[in-house]
Image 1 (cartoon, rainbow, N blue to C red):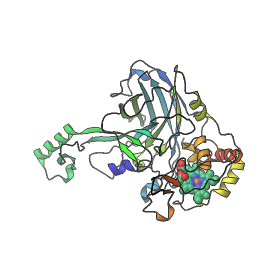
Image 2: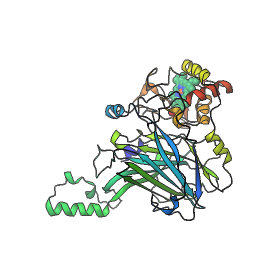
Image 3: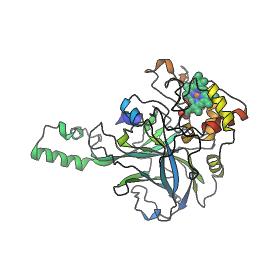
Image 4: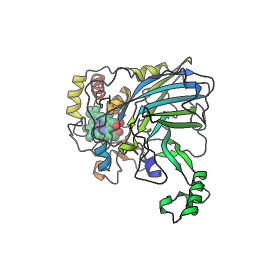
Length: 414
Ligand code: HEC
């Protein structure tokens, strides 16, 4: 399980359908959270009354294509992934915020027991641990050095048993590998069912790939649940978190940045093979503050797409792949930008060009891909510096490049 979790942020799709026009006019990246009286954080459910008046908005999720996975089957299955649309609504009160998210998935994938070649459907929510500048949000791939995120994750699993510190490893063994029959096997399965959990729900503090720490001390107060409706073939997930707990204090803000990820088990989605939303602004209705965040996350790029394209193709394509049909650079050179416009903010893109060290994307395992380090590490301070040179400094060029990069994203599935 640990290795699966550790690779969550990594992306995995070699190619995706390329769209020249912005995806959808319905997605504004703004969610209005309605005030409600009572949120049952620990036992949040899609059938709670709190959702009755909550308005949902369409949010588009893009295949994360940052790196190519070392799994031919997963790469092939996800080659032509389109973006998917989910319906998201939000509610809040003085102490908590909750989200409901619903998306179409024709195949319900549930991971059972200790089977490791079946991947479950799942979803995750991330929020910064704190934020002051809406232009400097954490890296969308689960945080970055100095810009931490809190990640809440749940996956569709049948009852399974997990180590609980009591030294009982016996009940983690698959019943198939158990030398037990008849009544013995039944006793064994009964015990697993009694000790087991039927949802894999976790939270992490993350500073980016390979720096995720699972929170096990209960300091983070949250709840999650996902239910599948076989008739409409849709998942509905809910997640609630206290605004102030031992992990973060988000209680002072009038608007919050939030982002979601969706995994499709049937497509071998796991680890970093997933669909990802950009940072969305959640405006807490009736609560003051947060205008700068809302403005930043809903702003349209200002530059000239054509001029930006000419510059980016000339200056950046030796390292970055910009289109699934034109693989210019080696996939190991630098992050694949095929969907960068779908899951990145304008400010992040501008910062990436002007100041590559502000957020350093970790990328591949440096030991496995020695010739392609995306960053160097200062031996004394441990600080990472990007191997990407600062490319542009004038605002016009940067704005144009950002406007072009924002067009790099897969088409939305119908
Ligand atoms: C010498 C190779 C090289 C060149 C040239 C280069 N980059 Fe990069 N770029 C990288 C590497 C390596 C990273 C990952 C490390 C980091 O985050 O800085 C990166 C990261 C990025 C990111 C963040 C990607 C993500 O997934 O979040 C963006 C955006 C980006 N570059 C845009 C550009 C643009 C635009 C240009 C041209 C103006 C450019 N790069 C030129 C190597 C390069």
